[in-house]
Length: 73
Image 1 (cartoon, helix red, strand yellow):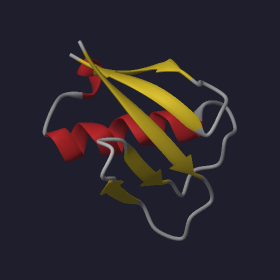
Image 2 (image 1 turned 90 degrees about the horizontal axis):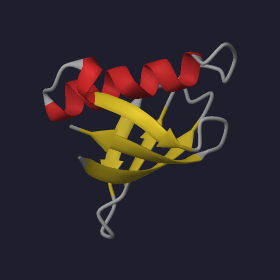
Image 3 (image 1 turned 30 degrees about the vertical axis):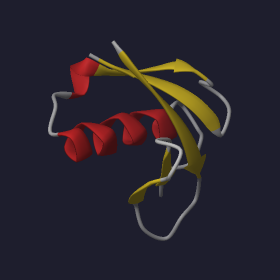
């Protein structure tokens, strides 16, 4: 399993993904952090970005924080 550090920006006007020089990813989400909506949107965006099914991506650490570790199978 590949692990990726992700920094999340919530309540953005548009969704966007940016790869940073340290191999981490910064993601802007339009979803609010209510009822796990932001994490669901994060998984969907990363699945599209990596061209993988959503079931292969999961949030390992930082469920409720802005800094997360995401596992990609």
